[in-house]
Every structure is written in C-alpha cells, then in structure tokens.
Length: 237
Image 1 (cartoon, rainbow, N blue to C red):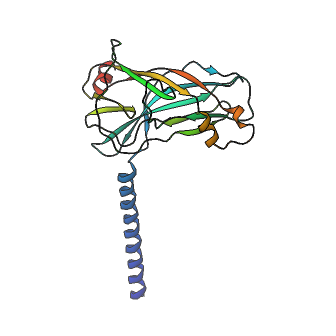
Image 2 (tube, one colour):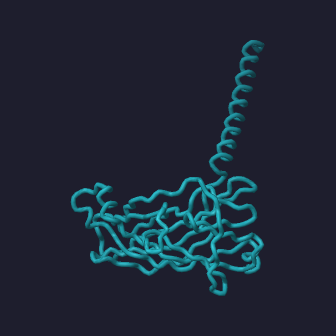
Image 3 (spheres, one colour):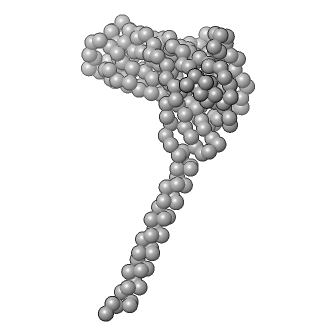
C-alpha cells in the first residue's frame, strides 16, 4: 500500500522542481531583454581594400562592415565596424601591433589617425550629416595584436544610437546619417582608416624591448559599403 506521506513529499518535490524550471526560463527571458535578444549580425560587407605593406614587409588590408542588433520589437541598432587582416607574404613570428583610434575626440581636418568616412547617394553626391545629441559610451582606442594571416573586427560606432523606422548610421561622434526604411535609394559609405601612433602613445603602451619594430603604420583606402533600406532591398530582389 502506498505511503501517503511519501507520495505527498514526491508531489511537493515535483512541483518545486517545475517551479524552479519555470523561474529559470523567466530569468533567461529577462536577461535576453536586458542584454539583447540576439548578438549583432552582419547585414552588409564592403570589398577588401588594397593591402598596404610597410618597410618590413607586413601587409594589412581592411574593409567596412555594417552590423545590426535587435533588442526588442521596436529597437534595432546599427553599428559600423572595421575589419583588419594581415595578408603578409612572408611569415612573421611576432604579431603586428596596430594602434586603432576608435573613440576619436579630435575632429580637426588635419588630424588623420582613425576612420574618416563620407556617405554618397546613387548619383555620387555627398550626403550631409544630421545633428544629434549623444551622451553615451564610445569604443576606446586600443592596441591590437594581429598575427600572421589573421583577421579582427573592431566596432567603430558609439553605443546606444538608434532611430525607429530607419537605419541610424554613426561611424563616430560628429557623423550621423539616417536612412529611412522607405527610402528607395541606395547609399555608399567609404573612407580611410589611418594607423599612425604618436611617440607618446607608443611610450604609454610600455612595449617590451624590440616590439616597436612590430608596429605597423599606414592608411587604408576603404572601398564603398552599400547600405540599403528595406524598401530598396525589396525592390532589388
């Protein structure tokens, strides 16, 4: 004959286990809503630039990549990234060192390091940037170690910028374009990316003896990245 006390304990244990499982699912859903329902996905990729080779035979190329991240039904952020690849013919035992200026604060025309972009329409006419207020976080400039025949993707855009019903394209502070979802025109984003650390930046890196020889310097001419609204993409398909 079944023990009624034992049966009740088993029912209580099963109920507790079910409640714990449901709580875990709810916590997972809550975490997804806070940290983003999905990781950033690539929506557009430009062609690779021509490689730039330094005096020691290190060759680096780059390209622009546009990523999107969906946070909820109404909020989607677009971020511009740059990919860098070592394409040296000779094998270098030590990785190349690249100082990538991402969070620019010097917007003087004569200041060349970092990314400089322009957006053009289908007729080749430059598109003027729009004013925007921003007080969030931006990617920090950083040293990158790039081994032989490897590739790295770096986010360039500030965080948290979005526009309902449109693609908000912000390569850096001071550059902001909005492409409406019903815009029928294609747009093309191109630019240059210059790596040329100053003497102070090299000293601050506290490199090991001999590592200064691994620093790569150069300017990459980045081919156009085509950006389409949903309507323009639908019309093309």
